[in-house]
Length: 52
Image (cartoon, rainbow, N blue to C red; front, side, top):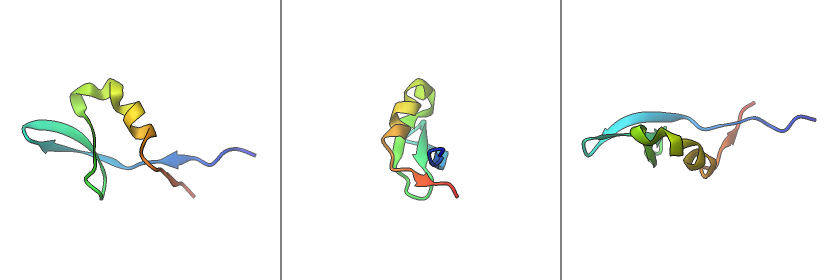
């Protein structure tokens, strides 16, 4: 049996003169866009929802 797929919707938004990846709908800041190398670790810490 395959493990369930997980996803997190993110959106970029300019905050304080800097672009950030935010969790869509909640506005939770994840990581600045120019630090994309840190995005996977930040995303792993966000409770993901199952994709059906």
